[in-house]
Length: 413
Image: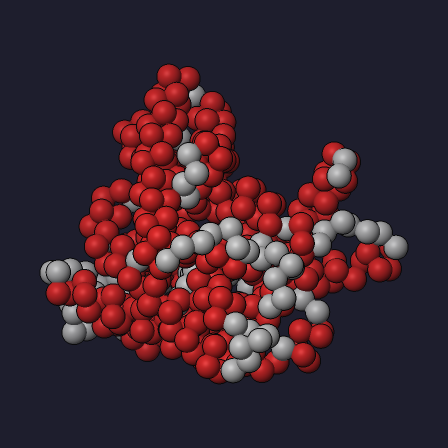
């Protein structure tokens, strides 16, 4: 593929994302929903104009993993407040480890039993679905929390849990996908060891890259050069982790961002006025493009041929999220860090599926015979989040009585 085709595809996707943002501005729809609608409309343009974008489900994987996900993960990690992040580290990590595994397992079991078609939807397909659905995207929840001046502790818990959750879910997805493609052999113990090595190794490499990025930014000493360093670090840490050290690129990106943020915390006035807006506009653009990309690949046939799988996916996803949250928070309370009941209910309903889930499911190779079923189930969860769960978060906050005046911890609240 020539460079002009690559640039053309990039411009087409970016324009679709911007059209979604414009539609959001004109109609006051949810931004993600507006971008999906824009994607559907842009999907009709090539037929009318007899123009081939070259965008296929089969060639999205590299775009997703090497362009979209590094920026989304880096941006999410960068904006966490270090002190509050450490304060809520235990429940966040429990939700992102035991919770993710529990969620993926429940989804896999219930989806496999519900579809009951071992030939068309084998166990490995159910596990792939579980790993993808375990990834959450609480952008709508965070927006509502900030509008209502809810406690910063709650905002931090929601954001940090989502960040760690995404990293774990992506690593789990990568392991399951490698197994599905026949790239990994061995026992469950071997797979678990590979998972641990990839996760821990990614953390070590990411921390080292974060230290290097912070030192270079301080040496160069300006806002413009700091943004350049951080942008290269976001993309480069994924590539270095995956290709040079054969560890999780996602965990590498996350730890690089967290480490660099901690080391540059006392230099914000000089190097990052306003916390550096670079990540906000990039995240907005990439999220809008991801939802537009979802609109581009949605077809009417998905609803007519995969309707049963899509109907099964929604209650299964909600049930799995409930198991993950309540079980993980119960463990957190045992270790002396309780989470209010009201907060737990919000985490369950606010565990929306969004950009990361779209990115992962679009990266499934079409060579796998069950890819369309998995994609349909994940899209059903995303659409449920966009049309129902997301818009009702405000009402849930009111119902739960979550305000800025509540105490920070109260396990029975």
